[in-house]
Structure formats: C-alpha cells, structure tokens
Length: 109
Length: 115
Image (cartoon, rainbow over all chains, first blue to last red; front, side):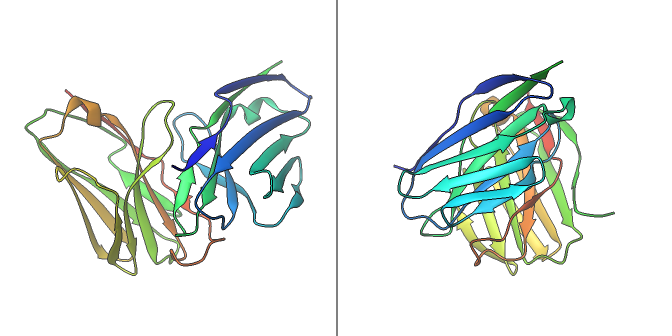
C-alpha cells in the first residue's frame, strides 16, 4: 500500500530552526508537495520538489531524496505565526496525491 | 471574492436531513476536488472533476453526491449521513488534474457535525 509518514507533533522555540521530516512509499513518484494549514483555515501551498536537492524560499526550504523516499521542510528564524500543521503529499504514478496526516508545529516564546 | 470560497462554514445536521455544501473558485481553474479531513488523519480525496467531468470517485458512500455544473462551481449533496461523517470538508481547485506540478488551492472548509 501507499504510505506517507510524518511526526504527529513538534515543538520549537521562537527564533530557532526546525526540520519536519516526511518519508514515503508510493507507487511511482511525480513530485512532493508541502502545505501549511493554520487551525481552522485552508491548507496553503508552500513548495513542490520533483528533483533531488534543496529548494529555498525565504525562511522555508524543502529537501528531497528520491532514492531514500525522504523529504524535509526546514523553517528558519521561527516566528509565532509559524505555529500550524504542515502537510506532506506525494503525487504517485497515477497523478493521485497521497497525503500524510500532517505535523502540528507548536512555537514557544 | 478571490480564491476558493465555501459555504456554509459550519453545518449541524441530523441523520435524516438533506443538505448541500457549495464551493466556488475564482481562479479560472479547470479541476475541482472534494476532500474529507478528520482529526489526525490524512486528507481523504472524495471526488475529482476535470473540465466538468468526474474523473475520480474514491469509493465514497452514495449518501455523498457531487455535482459540478460548470468549472467554477462544485456542490456536495448530503443525505442520511452517519455520525462518523462528521469532519471538515475541504474543496480545492487546480489548473487541471493532468500536470504533476500544479498545486491545489483550498477553500476554508465546511465543519460538518452529524447528530
């Protein structure tokens, strides 16, 4: 079966760096997405990786290793507004999106 | 209005009621989706419409009935639901469903409670 694994919850301190991991086993691979979802709000797109390596977008970076079935989202200079759930999703060979259950990130002052 | 809108935002219904959820996208997209989001579970894809044609129905019970009259509007008709159907129902849209890198844009969801 297809599976996406992420930690359920993480805690970090304001101003610090946090890495949220995502491992996947899917039928084929056509890219990996990261979304952010604040409580009670819509998920919003953060990044898309299809090639190995690191993609940087301001304070957020996303890394992919296709051979290891592994990705991480790196958040730098954490702010209180970064408290949210972070969803990892992989597009499989049928172009279907397979979603992880999300990682709830709690930022403490 | 911009983006993806959903109404109502909250809905409480009895198991014998009939209600409908509405989604509208103002992005000029051609694909629309219904998802169910339950606490601590992955998003469950329910239905996909691409260019108004239903292309995906992930074994969803018949008490959920989708309708897509045009590429901007999507409805989810509900009848004789069960308490386990209580969840957040999210609508999303994307440019189309055939390109791997097209991200989906989500609405704020309808929080459904079945009593």
